[in-house]
Amino acid sequence: MRNKQLLCILFPLLVACTGQRQQPVSGELIMEEAVRKGEVLQGETIPVDTALLRYAYRMRVQGDEAVILDLHNADYYYHVFTYPDFQYQSSFGKRGEGPGESVYASNVRFAGQDTVWVLDDGKGRMYQYSGIAGGESPRLEKDLLLDKRLFRSLDFDMKDASTVVIPDYSGENRFSWASLTSGELLRKFGQIPVSDPELLKKSAPAVAQGWNSFISFSPDKKILVAVTQFGERLDIYDMVSQKHIGKTGADGDPQFKVSPEGHGFPAGRICYYDVQVTDKYIYTIYDGRQFKDIIKLADAYKQGGRIFRIFTHEGDVVKTSVLDRPITGIYVDEAAGLLFGTDVNADEQIVKFSLELE
Image 1 (cartoon, rainbow, N blue to C red):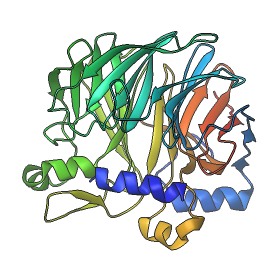
Image 2 (cartoon, rainbow, N blue to C red):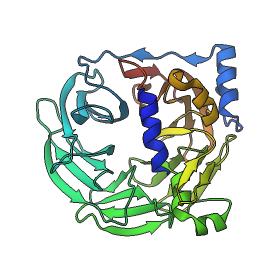
Image 3 (cartoon, rainbow, N blue to C red):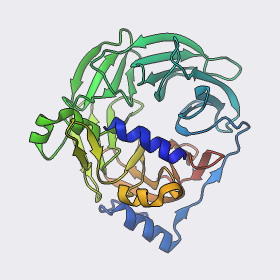
Image 4 (cartoon, helix red, strand yellow):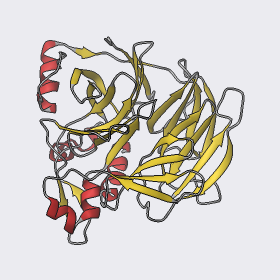
């Protein structure tokens, strides 16, 4: 049931093998080869001393604190844990329509050791909370109404203390910059790299919906990366040189249909689920299954991706691994050589994998 719920949320909004420098291979072949060779990474479930996690969709870590975005919790969207042992500390971001409450939480990002910004697409607002630390209670510090031109804000990352970047759902550009002081749209940049410019010209919002992307800024804020939810497309933007690198894998660019009402609906595969950029690498979690096959699975369908890829900042594949279970959100601890993921299909939803990083 959880899986059907998230797919119902996503659709209207749109509305291995290991080795060096691998050549593009379809998701199905990667999975089949890894299983055949017995090269599947085994995860370890981390017991959480609470039953509050219902749909742990995203994980953010800063120092010794972790925040989990839970899409289906009845009371709160965000939960604070100690890191790396994941002892529960507190919850915040109350679900509801009242002042300071959230209708549909989209993401969370740290803005310091004990401060986060969160995004509520349902209200078109961002909230800043402090007190994200052990022994404290999170406090709402700022309630920011976003510019109405930033409609359908489904993801974001921090450019700096005063600026946020949000994918542009108007289709006019790929990204929008907004002020964290006023909520005002500051500027736009980048173009959606479609192969059919006429389609973009005629149905820009639908194309933007079909190219729905998850984004991540590198820690030094020099590189912005976007991965597409409905296509095997990775885009890397160098903020210093203004260089853009686009990489399309074997499963192709996003496939979608434009409805008579001008909405974009996915027509191919569910692809990337999350992305994290560090000073060394780009980490992604990928699915690759076709929607027609997902529909056949019905209640047996498990949400998330099992293909974990590591890229260079130039978009070259360094390593591909297949996990023993699908996950939706990732956090890579390079120092510890660990991948943490959120498994929305299980009762215990936090899992870790040991990595061999170069």
